[in-house]
Amino acid sequence: MASRPNRPLSPHLQIYRLPLTGIISISHRITGVSLCFGLVLFVAVLSSVADSGFSYGIMQSWFDNLFVKLIYWGFVFALCFHLCHGVRHLIWDAGAGFDKASMDKFALYELAAAVLLTVLVLTLI
Image 1 (cartoon, helix red, strand yellow):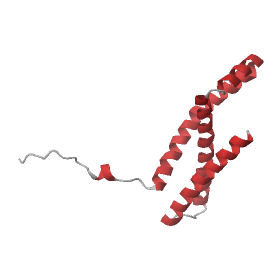
Image 2 (cartoon, rainbow, N blue to C red; image 1 turned 135 degrees about the vertical axis):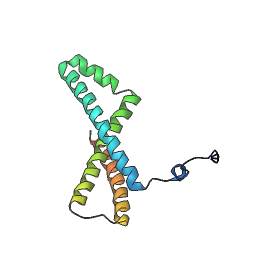
Image 3 (tube, one colour; image 1 turned 180 degrees about the vertical axis):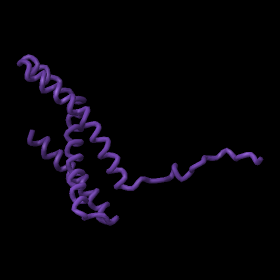
Image 4 (tube, helix red, strand yellow; image 1 turned 180 degrees about the horizontal axis):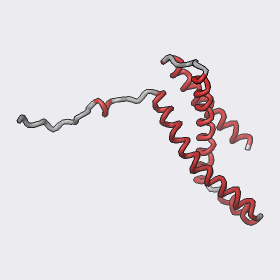
């Protein structure tokens, strides 16, 4: 039996670049899971705020913290991104946009729409 050289078994996995549609698909799943956890946190915040005026003051002081604001902005972006990807799935259900050029184009439109919606929501709230 010949000895095997010390080399990686699958070097193509080290140089493989995931296409944009793959990145968007994985991001959609990640935002879906993060929205589940974020929704639990959101309900906890709402229930404590509804408890009393003192709790409302505590929540206001928490939202002065930059880290909490970043979590909130990330939650809003995840919600907008997940919504835009859901619209993309509705377009796919209609039978449109399955060629490679339109998939990449719609992926960029989806990202741009998610960012614009996030900015719009954060400026209106």
